[in-house]
Length: 397
Image 1: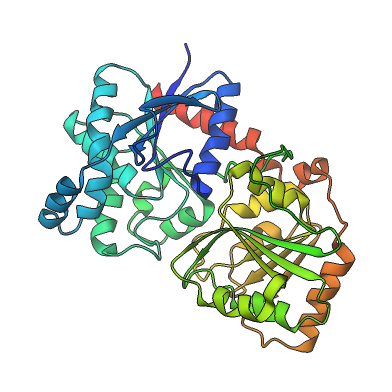
Image 2: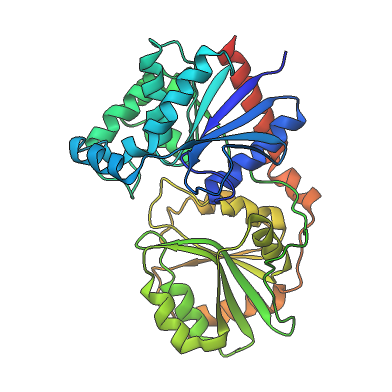
């Protein structure tokens, strides 16, 4: 009999972000192994269907709260008000699914925390009979973007306590070895990001266009105010003598990045802002670029999952880091073609020259995926997917 898994998201495709893309990869792999996969999410746009098949698996959407309902809830619930309006519409559907024996296990994907909150509430309503395994792609109470961390820690503790198991990143596991969650370490399984796989270029309607006469460097992802600062990279580019080096930013911004606005005026056509693109278009942009650029996080308990997209591409990588504790260094130390640049160092002529030389000498470099599979064997989608299946089987038996 097929395993039946329901992933729980606050938002899902066609909306896209790094976590959604990771789980979409995992869902496709699970389907290829005969697992019955579904996703439950909130219907944020009225034009979306209540139920549809995306990439071979079912996506179920429930109506979100009305503006009036949100106002009432937020005024009554000081701490969980924001999360409550996100997760409460999911609870009824989760309880209904449990009563109908529609799924063997529920997997809330985090971030945001509201997905775990919805399953915890359903767990309470079913007298603790729901089986669930949270999948933490980001930290919860120690997340730099969260407020009310002390209260959040209480809810996170409840999540670990009642879950059958938890999937966590290696960084979250290491952090939990030294905090109040360590008593549940035996219920935590380290699971790498499920996005190291062979990438294919498939034509889309929103293609990113490059001028092949230039050296096209691409940052693909989101810029976060205070967490992922672009100033160092932009100033290095500004000081380059080789004006043929172009930086393309493909993705979105959380908050306002004044650096982008400032340097766009300075750099002009050497800084190209493309905005959000479809997941496949973003992959194409990576594969067609000459150099990929990662801007390091200021936090050390999170690593951008796109690092594994970058590694999958086999393209040369420039990686800016905030300190020698940057977690990206762990994953890129074996990568055959990478330049790590410490943002704490003063930008000198030597640093700019190293940047320019790397771009010029490696613009045509390409590492074969078969070589990368050997270097990153435990991070392949097959390895991650099979580990996921083993843990789920043990949890539901």
